[in-house]
Structure formats: structure tokens, C-alpha cells
Length: 242
Image (tube, rainbow, N blue to C red; front, side, top):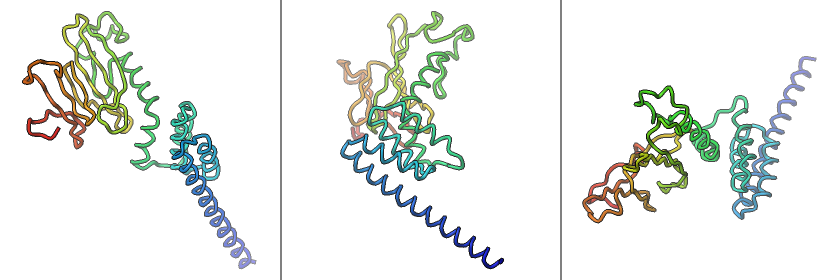
């Protein structure tokens, strides 16, 4: 009896392992087919295949990421965010650094929106606090307060040329006497300031920035490049490659 019981357990384990292997194979086939559909910009077809892959393998992180990507490219942002939420709610699943980076990039619109809403209400973004030096900071309920002596403008743009939008915050005195530009990059879900520029400034296609670009005196020009090792704009020497 014990021998038969052991054989039954062994057979069940083999059967389960085989089913798991078959499920993995089918999910991989769906993902490969979905990838081809995305390359041909047939996102609806890709979404159907990736939904099947996720249904077959409920903890396939790459399938979730591909599905969210397909939704984003199809212009279905809400569905992309729901997919990302489901991925983050999976039990006993830990994303690799590369996977986390992909998810943050796909979820950037929601993250940017949350960051800018918080900045508007508190003056805080990343490690920067715009209201820290004001004596009546506790009486300020938003950046629109009359107690804030500056105007703030927000935009999103890929100024570094890496394919990911940065948050660009423009700070201008209410009397119009000066203006500063602060770009922030999304790194691991956090806004990190990568520079501080005096306006006017222009960003070139190669990722470099030029301050005072409209000055008639070339001596006023400052050319800065992004130092990728510290993710910060640094002033370039005259002999540096532009």
C-alpha cells in the first residue's frame, strides 16, 4: 500500500511538472506571437495574445509588462495602469532592476501626474523644497498662494535624448526679472533633479543644453552636457565634444 501511495505521489508530481512546462511553453508562444503583432503595430491582436499568456501564467512578469506596453501604445492608459497594479499586487513576485525600470517607464504618466500634483500642493519634488526658505511656509496651501513670489510652469519633454520624458519646471519671478529651469528625471520611481539653468536655455538633439543661447556675446554662452555617471548636467570645456 505504501509503495502504491508513493508511486501515486510521484506520478502526480510528474503530471503537475509536465502541465507547468506545457503552460510555460504556450505562454511563451503567445508572447512571441504578440511581439510580432506589436512590431506590425497591430496592438489589439497583441493585447488578446498577451491576455491569454497572463491567464495561463498568472505570475509571468514579462507578460504583464508586455501587456501594459501594448495598452500604452494602443492609447489605453487606464488599462495599462490597471495591468501594472495587478502586477504589483502579485504575491511572492519580485521584479528585477530592469523589470522595475520598464514598469516605471510605462507608468510614467501616472507617476508624473502624482508628482506634479504633490508639487503644486506642497512645493516638494524629489529632494527639492521650493518653499523651505519662506518664513510663512505653514500658511501656504499651494503654489498659487499670493505668499509665493514666483510663478511655476510644468511641462514634459525628452531633453536628454534617451526616449524618456523629463519633468521640466520653470520658475519665474512675478516681476519677470529672472527665470530658472529645473529638469527632473524619473529614476526608480523618484524625481531626481539633473540640473539648474538660467533662462533662456535651449536643449539640443544630442542632449546638451545651451544657456543664454540668444546672447549676442558668445562669451555669455554656457554649454552643458549630461554626465551619465552621476545623472547631472555639467559645464563642458571649450575643447569638449559637442
